[in-house]
Length: 180
Image 1 (tube, rainbow, N blue to C red):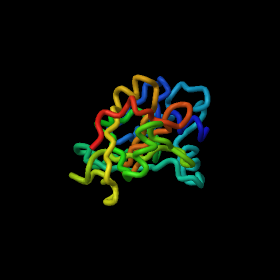
Image 2 (image 1 turned 180 degrees about the vertical axis):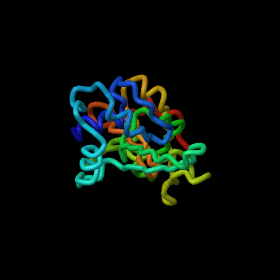
Image 3 (image 1 turned 120 degrees about the vertical axis):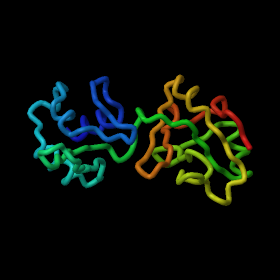
């Protein structure tokens, strides 16, 4: 069930999920899905899955809002902590050194031993994750072009843009929009 939840909350899975721009989905929408793996899952079971998940893949958010004369209504939302492919990512910038750029310019950005290539959404304005100060080269990735070539991009909970790259773990130089 945990794998199915991860997939649905990260990518939607073609299901009719009402996902907010921050990746949160109403719990009641998730438990009502017709997905075979979600049959028989209720709120208590879902809450237990989240609490027992050692990898902390999910977060629940309890929100209270005013509801007319009846007082307050509490709603519960859930999201995957990382890996949302449904989130719009306007910009992805990778900062690197001049030495590393020699290799990157020829073969592309590599995830190396990591699960993902790490990028920023911008250059440190308006609370956006910033690039390391020692980065002399900034590589702007054309996210739309890469997505069209089936290279996925995700946005982590702390705002880092992540991509596993292509089947070889690479974002090729063809996808570099510009380099500064």
